[in-house]
Image (cartoon, rainbow, N blue to C red; front, top):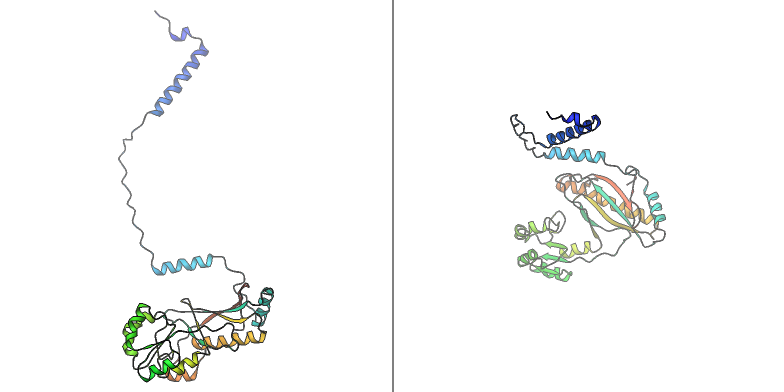
Length: 295
């Protein structure tokens, strides 16, 4: 009878051999892929999320605005005279810099973009020359040409306006032709704020008189957000002249946005819708924006 392996090998050698064999068996068992015999789980159906409504989007934006870091100077205001002194100190090396006035309006839904014309007590910049187009015929057309209107004609000018052949900045029209041009030009000139209208005085019999009135004034206009920006004075102006220009400009803007009541206009077409002024900021070319408290 042959002797067993345990009798032939030493005990220590046999223990080492057993440990190595168990390690190999363990590695072999781990390398074998075990297949599960359990039933397959059903795939979970994920329902698509509904698109957020406008109200939810607005609420989300409000939360973001509240969490956003606010400017520490946002609610700080100072008198107009003090703001002018600070901006002058900032621009001490640039005497030809310009004061800029920014007027922010509420611009609620349905509000018209604020615009108008103004003649400042002391002009801050040279006036730009307007290119005028007048829809007029007969005697009125001759008067318009003598007054210096660049483009004068009747309904034959409509196609040229649509095609951009007449790059005018002001459009005038006589009452007899306004119904003929409105159907075709209303959608072209209306969104740009250039369509002749009786309320703005661009539908008139006296074209020469209208041109005389606008020759001594300049146009101001807000953007779609209701923000009005205008150069208001030069840094070299005396403080009194800067204050006078700012006060005059704000009075014109308040009248155009319905913040002040004009009895003559109210008797003609009723009260104007109010577009509230929320902020008035004075700045300069290189200086900061300072919110004015006594605007």
